[in-house]
Amino acid sequence: MSILECRWQDNAILRLQQARRGRRVPHSYIFHGPDGVGKTLLACQWAKLQLCSSPVRRSGPSNLGGSVVEEIDDCCDRCDDCRSVEAGNHPDLHIINRDLARYTSKARDSQMLELPVDVIREFVIGPAGLAPGRGRARIFLIEQGHSMNRQAQNALLKTLEEPPANTFILLITSKPDLFLPTVRSRCQSIQFQPLPLEFVREKLSEAGVPDEQGWYWADFCGGRLGPALELAQMALYEAKCHLFEQLGLLGYGSALDLAAWIVDQAKVFGQSYLKSHPGHSLSDATRQGQSYFLQMITYAFSLALRRTAGVGQQGSSEIARIAERFCPGACARAIRAACRSESLLYTNVNVPLLFESLMLDCMDYAEH
Image 1 (cartoon, one colour):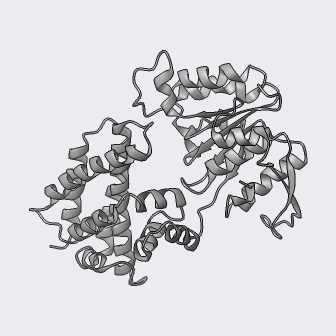
Image 2 (image 1 turned 45 degrees about the horizontal axis):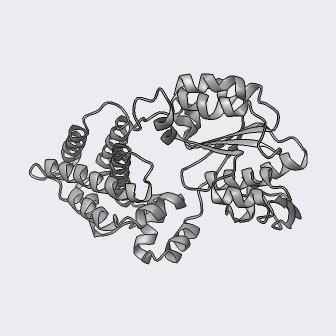
Image 3 (image 1 turned 90 degrees about the vertical axis):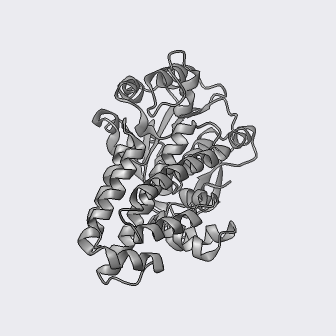
């Protein structure tokens, strides 16, 4: 796979190419931007290029990131190193995530919300002090780097500040503000942009997603191809339609029923999610489902807000019904309430009560 197949992230590719051409490749990067726009894909391709035993020059696009680039460095995709990276078993490429907590001696359980210090010490700091197995580089790719707790980030500081020769650390995140200032100051930052909605819709269509659903998921995910593909393939569209319909009919007799239905649907999502993400815990997968349903509620009211504000006729008949019952101010309050609820998901909160409170609040905002 060519590095140019990381589509619509030309500025990020240009930054990496300039560093390589100038022989000034930083030892630490933060790749930040929305989930599902290619951060991990480009990080893996960049790592493969650093490990490749026979890099090649390929013709670059006529305009890469606003600068003319005739040629770029790329991996050969033929050497043993490239093949090992593609197979996921290269000894010098280390993928770090929260799932590794189950293998640490001090891990309490495998359902941690944070990336604990024991994982960083055992799988990053320790191996970083060893020479690369194949001589070129040792690369650590830390997924959801923002989930490192404060202790883990502090433990990593010395390695970031004084990395061993030929050691590279890539922190991948959608929430760079959660890094300590001391971590951010030791890393080069590269920002990734949302993908064009038309590109996301085309990819969904290629995956067999019907056009109506493709447009919905592309817009809902805001140019994040990864989540759009995942949600489209999990048969959530019918649940979305039911949710939107019930929001438009929200009343005293249905608010608590809708809250219970969302909680149950999030559990169904979690069970389905685990089939394609077997390394995750059921509690994490269910929480992801709860988050998506809260985002769908936010999105429904945002569409209704646009409609009531006269910005357009966005959305379906369900959105029209919501717009009839919720004035612009009510839509805005419902959006704030849903966002507040999502921020509480990752705390020690009673989830059924959280959704019940949200639905009762939304019911109060409606024009009865």
